Image (cartoon, rainbow, N blue to C red):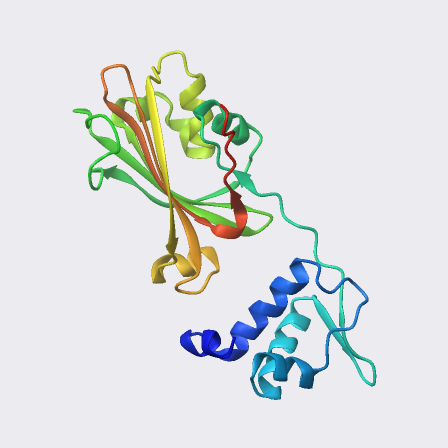
Length: 242
């Protein structure tokens, strides 16, 4: 354990904070139970007592612990877990999830733009693309930053709704849009400096990077989205027999 903690560039007190936070999350200490003493925790993790005290204070501020004079440190009832977004592996499943998701949308960019890099499938449209870059938030917490590139004709036809609603159900349900192929990739990455401020994370925190593409029957890319999610807001579930 000592070598593991020392190998990380993260300050020791933050590592101890995360160890205790995970222990609380996994129910190692139930609400109302006392944690081991500061001295015992310091001995277990081979750190100074002040390091453990710093970690306990952070968890007290998060409402996970309570220190009582003469009694010790008590585990408190954890906050209600948030509902995570289910990142389905089928387009229809993903669309159904987004139908019931009504996030707050905050626009960051709104302009004609070229798609960066090569799309996962298909070829680029001769119509050009319009970019909407925005954040999605729920209950005051931003959970993703998304850059969406729409085929210019598609955007012009559905501009009012695409500006104010989640895009996938609009595209999927529109009779004038042919959705012939769709693909997405998932990558676990580290949060960048720019996105850290938007997502209320620190640089290097884990994030989920999603790249999603929809093409028509001619293989023309109608929609391409690059999405960065907070890792604690999403889950991936797959039916292995589907």
